[in-house]
View 1 (spheres, rainbow, N blue to C red):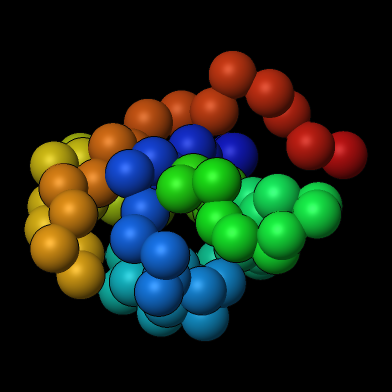
View 2: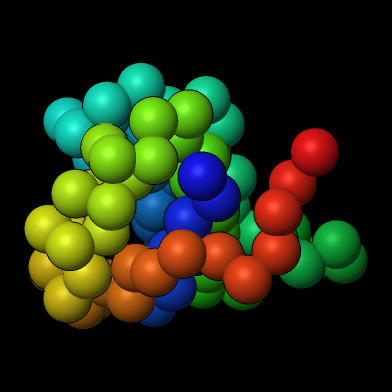
Length: 82
């Protein structure tokens, strides 16, 4: 299941997301979306988890949680990655 994670602080990396979501199950991929020119984060990313039950638990527990001073927006992604 692909999960959208919004309101990310500039300091957040893929490793942060992998470790955070890893508390709920195996993370297949974590990506922070960055501007192609500047390399700055666009303040959102995606986490992919194989186990949809674990993904739903992660979403329910992490949506609204504080991470590095920002309140996360966590929800199922509207896009599916191949």
